Length: 305
Image (cartoon, rainbow, N blue to C red; front, side, top):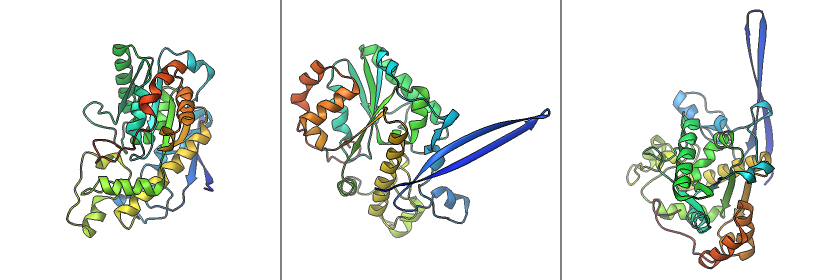
């Protein structure tokens, strides 16, 4: 996939007491395969000019220069606890990944965890505090269990990468990537009666019966230009992995992208992934019999993704 990069320069100058203070923030934005209009534009009643991403684009921009979080460094391996975060669109093997991580020695990992009474939503005005709560919960679980490796797997963490890295530059991210058509088909089978990827006022007019909002509705971005639920899920896949590509380019030592479910069916690939995460050879060898060839999960949403 060929991607174009647009550099946006934002300069804010504050003057006072005879002198000026300048602050520069440069953000990289990926140009995706289609120009999507944002729900934010609709809500504000603005003319809907084509834009690359759905709502929350600025939150997902990758800051560089002085404002950019630090990345993985050699000293990270010396930490008493190592945090690993799993990503992927959902319907891509995240339950299997969680099992693989929990199958290692001294490990405790969660899947789509409820934090302070709710799961992470896609849009939040308190992302830094939500990440702080999540990290505190993981570390508490690690302390209680004596685990050295801790973390969680959840598709919505993609919208919080900047905050995660700012809080801990040593976090490693495992990204599962399943075939686009397979993900779309799986979501269509397992989310019948709901539509998480289009604003309700759009799909309710076309499909007035049969669709209802659930606890998962706010955990996905919304695509206002999609002509159907299936179209919106496809846009979600495009958006997700274009954003992943940008983060991988900026922080190559923090990210590892693997094909799913192939990685769970290939011994060499699975061992390489687990070794990259930092697990010992003995731990990996002991876990392989229960991990290799694990069937991909196709249960309805809420019981596996």
